[in-house]
Image (cartoon, rainbow over all chains, first blue to last red; front, side):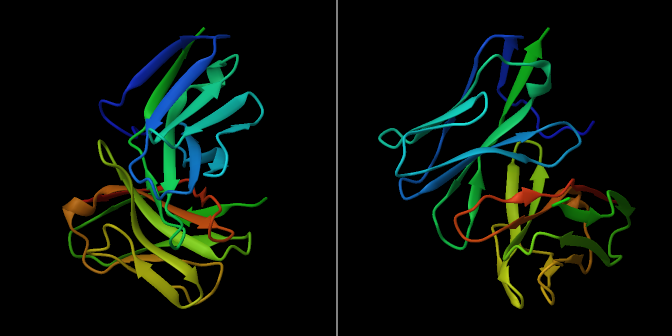
Length: 112
Length: 112
């Protein structure tokens, strides 16, 4: 597969455990946030989003938490599976022309 | 199947030889965008388009051109490629402002 980054922060978890991936965003004016998953050799894939008028949103096995006070976003994955192994990016949108800024990513390794 | 299709998947070219990477989406999306992904630098926006004949520069537009003559297509043109344009390129589309992007599978470009 193709490398998407060097020296990425890496989170290693045991299969079945919960994972928490964190992201600090840069602009207090950002009003829309997305978590993307990127598997080796593939494009980023949308996981879940949240708008700034919310502080929590749940999907299937995933939860996103938004703390606007400290400009922090987290992605929680319940019962992590080997198929969750990937690089995870957060992206923030300041609302202008749908321009997103992406974080550098966190690599999630799921150990069987 | 709703998707963003970009071609070619892999391309090796020589310095100065003009090339075009094609991108097409079948979701009738208004917004389209090109990103490049480099190790340690993450995803950076090259150009984006809000609709037919409406395009604007992203964060790293130098050395690239785009056009949006039809809603579904958004080709990326490198008039005179240089080795510093060796990268992994992604095309993406979005329904509208305030919605996330759907990404293509990527084009790995090497300029020698």
